[in-house]
Amino acid sequence: MAEPEASTSPAPAAPPAQQHPGTRPPRARRRRWILGAVGVSALAGAGLWIAVHRIPWMGPLVAGGLRAVIGTENVTDLEETAYAVEDRILRLFRGNEPPKTYWEVPEEAPAPAAPAASLTAAVALSAPTARASSGVVPALFRPKDVGPSHEAWSAPGDGRWVPIVDHARPDEPPRLYKTLLHPDPSRSWAELFVVAVDLSRVDLHLMAGSREPAATTKEGETLARPAKIPEAHHEHLLAAFNGGFMTEHGKWGMRLDDVTVVPPRDKGCTVALYRDDRVRIAPWTALAADEAGMRWWRQAPSCMAVGGELHPALRAPNVRNWGATLDGNTVIRRSAVGMDRDGKVLFVAISNHTTATAIALGLRHAGAWDVAQLDVNWSYPKFLLYEPGEDGALKAVALASGFEFSEDEYIRKRSRRDFFYLTRKPSAPPAAAP
Image 1 (cartoon, rainbow, N blue to C red):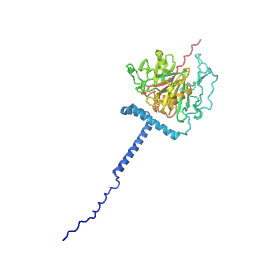
Image 2 (cartoon, rainbow, N blue to C red; image 1 turned 30 degrees about the horizontal axis):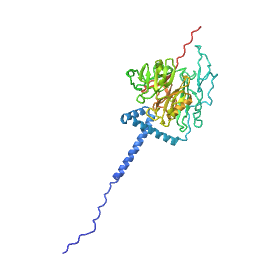
Image 3 (cartoon, rainbow, N blue to C red; image 1 turned 180 degrees about the horizontal axis):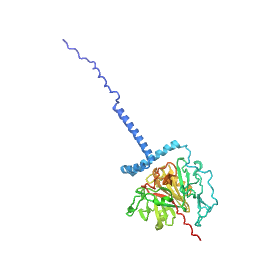
Image 4 (cartoon, one colour; image 1 turned 30 degrees about the vertical axis):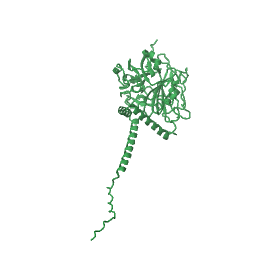
C-alpha cells in the first residue's frame, strides 16, 4: 500500500501575539519618555529663570553653584544665551509697546525763585530764599530738565526732574531728584532711572560687604566688615545703592578705612572720596598721585565717559568691557554713577534691559560728565530710599517697582556685596550771639 504523499501546503501561521491593553511598543514608549523629559526640562528651566528673577538669593546661588560645577566661561555662555532669548521674546511680544512712566510728573517743573549762576549745562541752582541762623545762605538744589533721550520714543515726563521727598524732614528743600529716560529707541522697555544728588548737602559713603570684594592682600583680610550701615548714621540716612563687581570678575580694586582690600588696576575707573569731601570719577592713572588725600576709593571697569567724551569701545559692535564676564552688548539690568562737569552733582543710574552703550548715553544725556559702570545682572543693581515705618524704625523703599530688596536691606541685614549710601550733611552749628 502506497504511503500518502507529504502535504505541500504551508502550515497555518501562528496567531499574532496579543498585547496587554494599555501597553505600547518599545519605540513609542521611548519617544514618549524623551518628549516628556524635554517638556519637564523646559518647564524646570522656565521655572528656574522666573525664580532667579523673583527671589533675591536665587540668582547668586544658581550662578555661583554652576560656576563651581561647569566653570565660569560655560556659565557666561549660558547667561548670554538666556538673556539673548529673553530679549528676542520681549522684542517679539512687546515690540509695539509704548514706553511707560513710574511716577507722577508735574506738567511743568517749578521754576527757582531767582536763578543763580549755572553749574553746568545740565544742572542749575536756584537762589536762596532764607538765611540760616548761622548766617550762611544755603543754595536750593534743582537740576535743569534735560527732556527725553529720543523725542519719538519716550514716556510722559521723560527727562523732567522730580523732587524726592525726605520723609524724615519733609519741610526741607530736596537733596535728591529723580528722572526716567528711555535710552534705547529699539526697546521701549529699556528704562533708565536716574537720581541726581546734591553733594553740597549730602555725604557719600562706601561699605564693604561681608564677602565681597574678596580680599587679595594680607591687610585686606583683616578689614572689619560690618556689612551694614552703622546705626549712628540711621538718623541722617537718605538712600543706598549697590557697589561693584565681585573680585573674581576683573579684580577691580578697593581701599577703605586706610586698608587696601584689592590693589588698584591702572585702567580701572575709580570712584574716590577725598578728605576734603570732594568726589571724583576718573581712570586710576589720573588719580593715583593723590591717593594719600583720599578717604576711600572703589574701582569699576574702564570709564564709560571721561571729560564728557564717550569711551571709543562703546561705539564698537563688540563691546565686552562692561559686563563682568558678560558681553557689553548683552541686554541686562545695569547700574552706573556719574559726576557733573564741576564735581557738584552725583548721578546714580539703575537700568532695566540695557546694553552698556545705552546706559552710558543715558547718563551723558542726564548731565554726567564722567561715568563709571558698577554692577550688572538682575539681583544686584538697586537704589533704595529710607523712611520711617509704622513703628518708627527705618525701612527701605525701592526707587521704582521691579527691584529686588528687603525692608531691612543694608540697615539691619548684612550685605554680602559692597554698597554705597547717602546721608544728610550735618547742619552747621548756630553762630554765637554778638
